[in-house]
Amino acid sequence: MDLAAARAQLIKHLSSEIRDQRVLDAMAKIPRERFVPRECHSLAYEDRPLPIGWGQTISQPYIVALMTEALELGGGERVLELGTGSGYQAAILAELAAYVVTVERISPLADNARRVLEELGYRNVEVHLAGAHLGWPPGAPYDAIMVTAAARRVPSELMEQLAEGGRLVIPVGSRWEQELLKVVKRQGKELQANLGACRFVPLIGPGAWGEEESEF
Ligand code: SAH
Image (cartoon, rainbow, N blue to C red; front, side, top):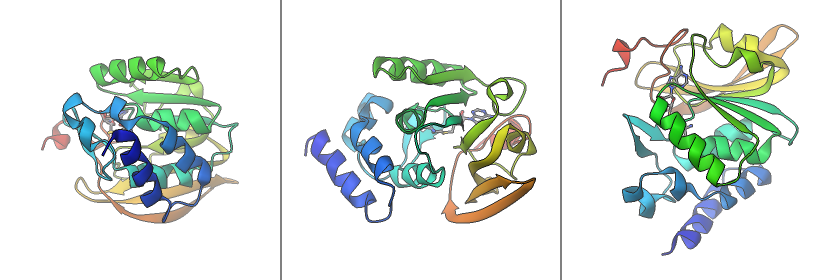
């Protein structure tokens, strides 16, 4: 099967669970094969995570769709992503929001993602190398924040970067298994919903796991 047909079949499969048509349309448009290593091209539209080097993975398309849907993007938002990885999720956010700031701690991944996003013509995405603070405080407040690596708890540093009424989606739990949480910031309160079990690589750095704890 060629990649275009495989992509169409994946979107059809996702549409049984994902209701937000804008999310499905964005995923139908973006060439996921551009974000995975060459040797994985033929697997680009399987509903599974794939290795992207440096011990990291591009998430399973279903999880990408679920997390994106949870952000409830209408088109005008400023969005922060933690964990640029391949840049695939950032491309989806760039399709669905006004502006995306994405942060990655592994320099070659950040460079590669920046290049692919530029080649695909995205002009509303900033890729940053992670600094001393979790997230990207200079760009705050954000209407939506997506964390694509696992945290032990909902980091207060990120709640501070979230706008009033904003949505944060984050996997929270142990090193090996997590629950996907959606947190809405409303009038000083954090309203939480659990979107189900998931498994992500660890979020590393201030407010998250230490380097040594992330070893496999
Ligand atoms: N969203 C990515 C997949 C992310 S994998 C995609 O679409 O391909 C998780 C990524 O989070 C890894 O690349 C890892 O290096 C990065 N990461 C871990 N801790 C981080 C931190 N504190 N800040 C930014 N990125 C981090």
